[in-house]
Amino acid sequence: MLSGLNGRVVIVGAGHAGGTAATLLRQYGWTGAITLVGAEARPPYQRPPLSKGLMLGKVTPQELQLKPEGFYAERQIELRTGTCVTRVEREAQRVLLETGEALAYDHLILATGARLRPLPVPGIDLAGVVSLRTDVDALRLRAAVQPGTRVLVVGGGYIGLEAAASARTLGAEVCVLERENRLMARVASQELSAFVTGYARSKGVAIELSASVVGFDGEQGQVRSARLADGRSLPCDLALVGIGVLAEQALAQEAGLVCEDGVVVDEEALTSDPRISAIGDCTRRPVVLFERNARLESVHNAMEQAKQVAARLCGKPQPVAEAPWTWSDQFDLRLQIAGLTSPDDQVALRGDTAGNAFAIFHISPQGLLRAVEAVNAPMDFAFARMAIGKRLRTPGVRLSDPAIPLKDVAIA
Ligand code: FAD
Image 1 (cartoon, rainbow, N blue to C red):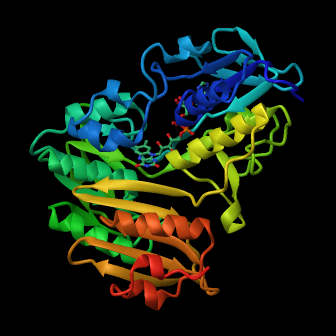
Image 2: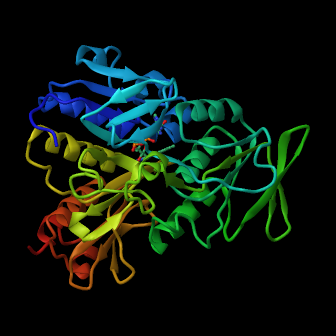
């Protein structure tokens, strides 16, 4: 185990989690060597704008960087971009790089993120069948989407819907294909799914539910249509496949760390090896407020776990457990979601779906506020996030009553 603040820390993955952990370690007083190794060509950057502002041309790739040029060097953080770690040797306490070099560590942090869930169908390799995870993907997509381009989005989750909204805003003809019988089935309530479906359709996005893609057809190597399980063929110039991600856990698994759809960590982001932590999208972690384990894919999760590991290594108090939260921008809707839902939750609506500003609250059978899905309702979201974190009880009837101010709704 480490003692003092001067061991060698190696961080694998220079994304939101890895970049934040390196920064916080220095901020909390770590004096030893910190090496941040990332496979991508660029220093750590924010992914959320890839499907939103970057695709719409409102922000530049440069503006997405987590930290300004020179930041890491100034803090003696050795940043090695464009470099893949190929192996973790736990006995020797070192990682091997694709260059053949080895980096020794006293503590290793895995922050390898997630990789795209593959869609194993014929035609997936045709030109024009694309995905969206990196800045390179987003810039390619933006260049390909022109007014009138026929874009098929395979997958009606947050990222697919954001990209669909951006493409539509750029003047494309957009159709979203979703295998389940509602949009965002894995992450949103029936009520929110229904609202978002209606809203996207009102903006001219075609939405096909219960629609499975079984292949793509092309001409001269370029995609021309998608084939559906029901026999239909839908023409397209571009097909964006966004059917979710899988934890990038190969290094951890090969090294014999416990993995269960994500590298398993404790509430301080420690893996089954006391010299190895894991943070961000690659982990399966305890969500303390909900007494369950989950794999969370969000900026908040990446930052919270980066804080946990930096605090633990630097001997600082652990951050207070917060409700998990995320957001999504689609057209002029800002969705903000906090907490985790359960099938036995009761649902209470506050606000006006017709006015596109409302919040759906989820309340447990014991009366605890467990989750919120807010649409253009930032105050409702802020209240709910706080109330979930404090485990406040909130009767649904009072939440739904616009005459009762939110500050008077909760019961401790
Ligand atoms: P990542 O950001 O994926 O970083 C992991 C890094 O590790 C990658 O750069 C990868 O190349 C590198 N790596 C992997 N293996 C190796 C290896 N062996 N050697 C070296 N490097 C390696 N979240 C929200 O909360 N709100 C949003 O609105 C939102 N929108 C999103 C929109 C898009 C288009 C995408 C793709 C994601 C969005 N997310 C959003 C999710 C959020 O970006 C992720 O949860 C967050 O980036 C996770 O950070 P991470 O560091 O764990 O993983």
